[in-house]
View 1 (cartoon, one colour):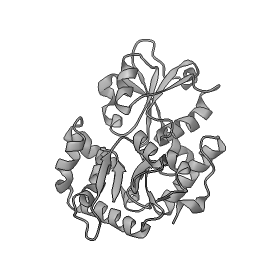
View 2 (cartoon, one colour; view 1 turned 60 degrees about the horizontal axis):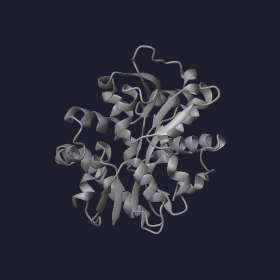
View 3 (cartoon, helix red, strand yellow; view 1 turned 30 degrees about the vertical axis):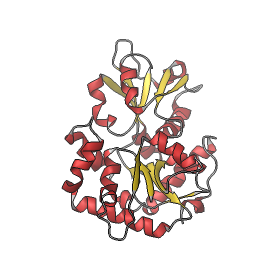
View 4 (cartoon, helix red, strand yellow; view 1 turned 45 degrees about the horizontal axis):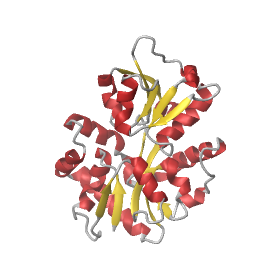
Length: 280
């Protein structure tokens, strides 16, 4: 079975046991490690992986071929994307000024970008000036160096952005939580509808439980794939993004996903999704 997920600590932590043959009855995995923008594209292609991690923002485009699995993904609180600017002289924190600004984002089909668009619809009269898509690792340097006015960042940037001399303009996760009182749906695990979905769900949940039971056993694998992160940042990343929703989405998680996609559809950002298609 082939699978694609990111080299980020939460994904490697979750899938360590299955990748290393430690989940009884689970088939051997052939793994493609790629950033979320690439995995989103893989899932949208005609020969996508059997199982793949994508942004919830990309889900509406792939539901005909793939089913959302109720585990393995990233939902939670206090873990949303951040909108950053620099603390250079003359820098700004007034969102209205984004109307005349360049903003770097990691993907136009990421949940981060979806949340940003929903937030901007309320806070940036006239809309954002210009959107620049950059690889995730280039965004904070671009803001620091003045190549763009603001940057939308995810994951470990929450812990490292002060080292780039950047300041927070908006915590879009906090905005979402205050607006909806729901967790933030970030990354989803999907599998081809032609496969044994209950079995795959069970294997992923077993891998999650193994990771929690024996965290030290995955440490070398996780650190190998997050070479630019310190052990401390890696552990903080896992603690934040691997939580009860990773083991099972639950009704609250499904409600969060339905709410996000419904709001995005009303803004014309994604196709309308039948809530029944989110469950198998």
